[in-house]
Each structure stands twice: as structure tokens, then as C-alpha cells.
Amino acid sequence: MIFRNIVISALAILLPSAGQSEEYHGLIVKGNHKKLPVVVKVDGNDMVTSSEIKNTIKLGLLSHNIKFSEGDSNSMHYLLVDVTIIKKGTSFSTDLFLQKNAKVYAPNIPFLGHSIKPSEGDYKTVGTANRKHLIIDALNFSLHSFLTDYVDSNRAHLEDSKIIEDLNVKDE
Image (cartoon, rainbow, N blue to C red; front, side, top):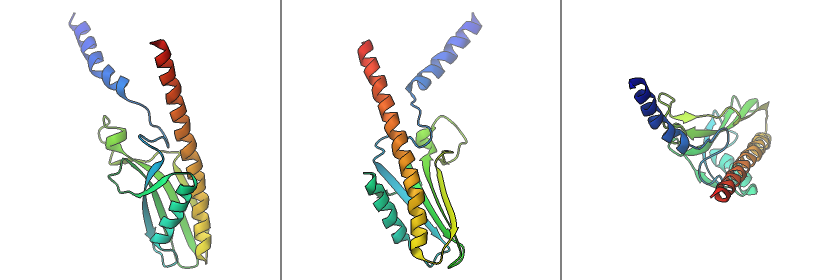
């Protein structure tokens, strides 16, 4: 009798939270995926400015009908763009990835940290360049790859959600 009450109590506590959560794995985001906050970090650089990087990102987002906005680490999710130039005229790297706020995307998991970085959301380019346009071209390449996956993932998620809603309506 006591064991039965413990099992029923545990199920009553766990099941409502499991039933209410929706999965947002990988590049799938909560809310409108057509609005993407962006955080830009530029290190060791005298060749490309932060505003040039932001303009490149804005144009890339607009080409996919996504609205650019300034983000920060408190945003629900954001695109982190990190451009590092080791030495003028030599090595550089561009790194783009989606960061998700752990409090929003995994509120029931303690000790996770401040943000979540999906494993498939990391787009890097490494190279050498002595001209600004080569770095911008590399950034555009990574950005295009990211945006293609980001839009496809979120579109597929919305279509799956719509199918589930349609099935639920038919069942009623």
C-alpha cells in the first residue's frame, strides 16, 4: 500500500512536467525563428571591424528573410559570431554557432550552466588572408551553411507541429 502511494505520487509529480515540455533540439528555437539576435566578437583584429562583420551578418540574415537584432547572453537564444585574426596578413578563424539560454530551454536540469551550445550548430572556417574581402567571404560561407540548416530545421519543426495539431483536431 505504501509502495503504491509512493509510485502514484512520483508519477503525479513527473508526468505533468514531461507532458508540457516540447523538444527544441539542435538548431530548433522557441518562438519566431525569423527573428535572430546576434552577438559579434572580434579579436586581435586590425583588418575587419565589428560593424563590417555585423553588416555582413545582417545581409545574410535578410537574404533568408530573418530579422537581425542585437543580442546578449541573456537573450532566449542568439547567434554568436566570433572572428579571430592571429596576425595581420596571416591566420584567421570564423566561428558561428547558436547559443540557447539554459534557463529557457532546460529549466528543469540543474547545474547545466548559463547557455547550451547544440552540437550540430557549430560552423567554422580557418584560413589565411591578407585582404579583408577574403575574411568576409569565409564568414559568408559559414553563415550561408548555418542559415540553410537553421531555416530547414525550424521549418521542418513547424511543419511537424502543424501535422500534430491537425491530428489532435481530427481526434476531437
